[in-house]
Image (cartoon, rainbow, N blue to C red; front, side):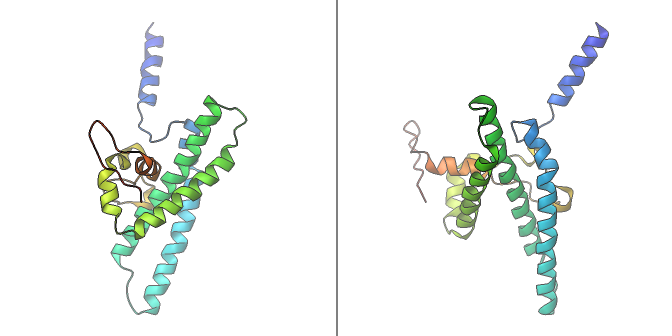
Length: 179
């Protein structure tokens, strides 16, 4: 009985670990493959910023490094979330569903949205009206090389896109606009 109780408690401790992803495969992807890709890209871009600053006889601005860290964190989150959705679909709907193809298409769509919103003057308005677009950073913490980041965590561009496509709520009369 005591051994069984310790197994149950051990399982509870393991399963209570927060994660922004639905599938353990996505957690593994986030902590392994995506981390490696993001780390390499981050180092490359940071090197480019340092070369640019040196050529101008300046130091790299903290603002630029902070924005790069936030962007890379959001990019890692979007990449993993796209594959997570594909994994869920394969498990729940169609065992032959092409997760890789879906993941690539999903990433392309959401990266385009990221670019569009980051240059849009309407971004603060959109983010306010789609309050569900922010996730708790503790659910999927940033990689150590990207810390420290803002306490708001990454923008969940997948939820944000769904929110932007949702018609106004007749109960509350919210006026979500398409951009």
